[in-house]
Length: 163
Image 1 (cartoon, rainbow, N blue to C red):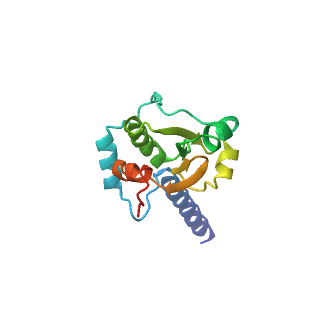
Image 2 (image 1 turned 45 degrees about the horizontal axis):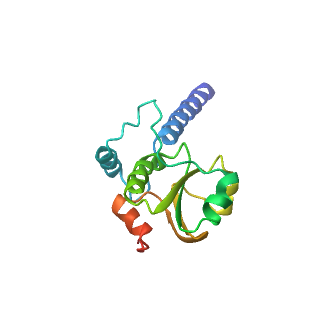
Image 3 (image 1 turned 120 degrees about the vertical axis):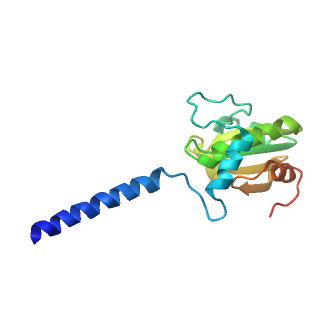
């Protein structure tokens, strides 16, 4: 009887490990987003996320040394895209921001890897990804957490409140 109990415990342990592995490797989806909408976004953007080659980035990266000069001391609007390399939605949102940056060239655009530029992320209290922060004349005027469609991003940049 003890042998049967040990075998049962081992089987339960193995099943728990498999379930944990599946949970960890599955992309995060919240209650307002389902896999169908993510697939539609990927389809509309013609993204091939399986490609090993790095996409060409049009938005420059911002470092801690450049932050004061290019953001806080800049007279005009600056948008910072805070992301991480492991964030699935950051990867989907990046091409949308790049597309809008080509259309709205009166704003400076920068990307910040929140895991590499910890001082900038900490100064701006970044806790979720993706997060975009809009500055005007060195002062934060708007912030959005999470991925939004292109039209809402344009409204965000124009000062229209996003609900």
